Amino acid sequence: MKRKYTLLVILLFIGAEVTFAQLSDKDWKYIVVREDVVKPSMTNDYEASLTDLRSFLMENKVHGVKYITQLQDNLHYTHITTVKKLGEFDEGLSAYIRGDKKSAEFDLIWSDLNETIESYSYYVVKYEDDLSYVPDDKVWLEDAPYRRWNYFYFQPGTEKEVQKLISAWKNLYEDKGISNGFRVYTGVIGIERPVIIFTTWAKNPRDFQENIQKNIELLGEEGTILWMAMMQLVRKVETVEGWYLPQYSFVPE
Image (tube, rainbow, N blue to C red):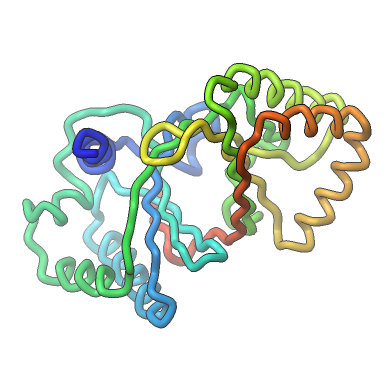
């Protein structure tokens, strides 16, 4: 456990070169996720602290910090950052957390935020560009804020077979000219494995359901066969819904 924790600290606070809207998916590599379990009675206070933190980062022009915030239907808030490579890094949020840079304002904000959460965790996933299908080439932020995360946990040793099935699934989507897509991630650190995470997006839940129905009709029997083949390898499925929250995200120009 200590080794995993140390690696996460390195990724998050020493060498994170982060990017979002200005890059295409092909520039993504790893996604670092902080998940906060917020006390239900203190969600307003938690969001107020996120607002204060965002204002602090903007006013102080803190470099090397970018994240997008999402709310899940289980009242877990996630803050995600893309990581390209490791390197020396002394600026950013870490300097305030470590105390290298002194700020009474930041200390108060960070203390208030910690008061509102039951616990937090970090995990790392890898973006699988070759398995993802994104026909509109969008980063899906403000224009499609609704999210659906499907976690498919597979039998150990089936990873290669699963990837072949997902690749066939992607090819079928392309052949049928389906207009809405999916992004695929695999677990790396801090998450139960083997796991494939499918992320889909839409304007709202109704739009999402309409897209699903259209896709089922277009994919037809071929889609059903591929889906059933993949389900033969699945040992557990978890589905989470939620929303992208631009008002609490920090993605400076």
